[in-house]
Image 1: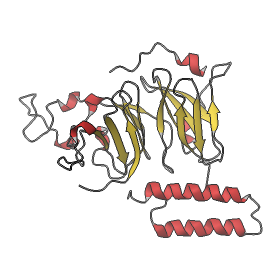
Image 2 (image 1 turned 60 degrees about the vertical axis):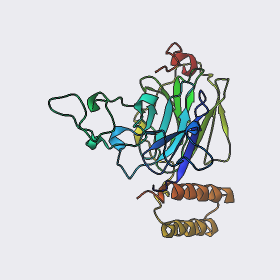
Image 3 (image 1 turned 45 degrees about the vertical axis):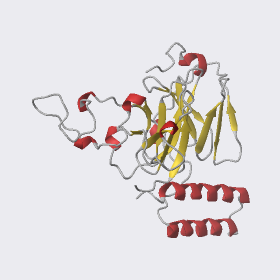
Amino acid sequence: MPVVNLNAIAIDPRNPNLFAVAGLDEYTRLYDIRKYRWDASTNFDQPAYYFCPPHLIGNDAVGITGLSFSDQSELLVSYNDEDIYLFTRDMGLGSIPVETSSLSLSSESSEMKPGTSSSMDADNKLVPQVYKGHRNCETVKGVSFFGPRCEYVVSGSDCGRIFIWKKRGGELIRVMEADKHVVNCIKPHPYMTVLVSSGIEKDIKIWTPKAIERATLPEKIEQKPKARGWMCPVASPQDLMLQLFSLQRRRTSPEHNEESSTFGHELLQLMYTFNATSDISSDDGGDTTSHDDLFS
């Protein structure tokens, strides 16, 4: 079995026996610790379930940067250079993933042809809810649920903003400026309607819903220019060293008068970029709480 570098791990709050891991390939793997024994009599390499959007199966160019479980055991998965997806248990691919192209139906029968691992009609296969609008390309970003019954989905973005969607339906309802560069981490308070965000800047921001007037979404959200022009994908150690030398020259040049902390932030972002790209060549808690209550 190939080794996959991991970026994220999450434990199901309703069933701590279940945990999910994901990293530099297209699959999220769900494990059940009750199926394994510490005496090596069982194989720890075999997950109980795989999860992946059908169109990304077999795509070697994507990876996963963030995972989160809701209180209803739904699994939220954030892909790099792609979108965010919400899975329920019945969307799993089983313990052995099968590419979509291998699922074929007999023209005279609704049963699967022999050799497939699923008895479900491919046309009736459940597909995950998708959340769009943010950008997740340059760093490793987390993803979280928000609200007393996990009614919302939140994520950072390369454009330095926080994105908030309604979990049911995937409607984008709020975009907030949160960092001059990139927002990487967003965590909700376990009991209060409070968010905490952090990114490339050195401070951590605490957010509470205090708006007097209804917020409006900015136009052309996906077309906002990147916060940094110098950042580019880093695919090899040689590319990394070239950019490090470039940053060092900028800091020591006579005309460069920025604080040394700025250089540290740029170096940190560059290292995150290299780490993220070097190995890559149902009950939803109801809909009774309107987003007007929290984000008006």
